[in-house]
Image 1: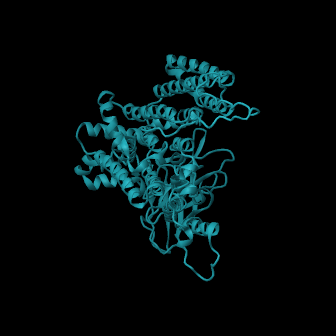
Image 2 (image 1 turned 180 degrees about the vertical axis):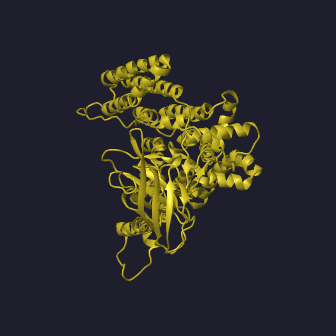
Image 3 (image 1 turned 120 degrees about the vertical axis):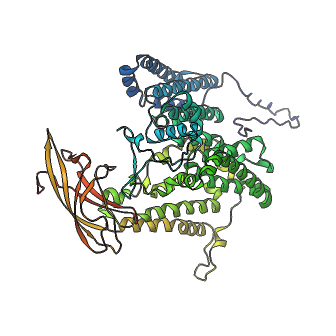
Length: 602
């Protein structure tokens, strides 16, 4: 890949020598690479922040290692010494070259800590066990998509994704590349460790690659974001295919505006396109970044080459990515096309139960529910389209933030987890360090004023005002959808009569009698669970009551928790809620379960 970044380049020009006797001699330009040149203070700060980030989570890893693997604990103790030494050296070394060596030492220490963490925790979560099972099916020539594997979730440490229709998802719902990479490893390591090793190795390799690709003062920031802070390594240990996608996207994003310069992709451009296609074949998050990159690439190249040549180079880039994606998916698509298509689209269509930190929490945590949860999804889709359109219209302004914009749409989704944001943060850093605003100075973008109707009421709507109106028009539909979803009342009115029992020192619910009134004009099929804080329990059993509640009717339900007993939290916490959800349409109703001291039927 061609490296187009040249930091600190000196340009020396020779002019006519002055003959005036009083003219002082010209000051020679400083030579590059002088060992005695002092490092920049902000470079020291980057190194120190990266060093500090390695402390996060290290104590917990050392504590676990002392109980299960003392040799690993000894390595972690040595890493502590390395962290302290790097912190001192980052503030004391006097040359840039010495500080670069400290940056390298911080990276090596981070890699060692991640390897120690993997040795201590590589069992994986639901993503890991599903990927391991998919790798096993590939090895034996059996279908991967459309197969239900409920026994994988018998272990209490493996969570299952519940759906709003009252069920759960036990199938593989990711593109196949991570499972394909894990298959040969699984042939040797017959456990989930095969599926967690692939993303862990991908994270380490991509972190080292990013370290070398970034300008020197930014390198320790890559160590902190990729391997420090205790964030991404744990997703890798869990077996998230998104980490594999992240690793493949790093070479795509670094200096991406240089792709196709002069109208030729070249080996570097072909490699970037292939990595983009492979990332899309590893996990769906890459799908959301791809259209932003293509729009940005076309706009930059059109400003340089004109519309026809820009379209040609963007088409070659897209075709290369699509061919790579197709090669990874071809076997599975031919094997069972409907099952494969449903599998890779599953996260967008499964209607998983609400979870996350986004605006859907208004209806889940702060009100009694909503009868129009689907509008959160509509708002998320409209926001994504609006951001794509805004990128096209204002690429000179938004181009530097192109790697951040795709993830904003997830904040409006019904499944708005922090992982959707933070797992791609190394791409944010890569763009910040290698894609300056100057790269978009000549990028093509249409004039917003031309998109507005020439109405007599808007005679002076030009320039910034026109841009503001267009931007507001692009984002307003998403905001309207969010308001509709958040302001809609819950579809059911529920009154609860819980029955309590005492198991040892714990007081809990054994059954709840629910009086439910359907206030909507749509038949609803409610499913019940409990919630304390965030998340939700397993589905409660409906011991009596109709499966479908007709419009504007009421019914009595008796529901029972899994295992016949649900312990109630003590103290003055947020309390426990009974939730009733439906899949079509997506709705939720919440009602607080009265405490044992004030409830009837105890």
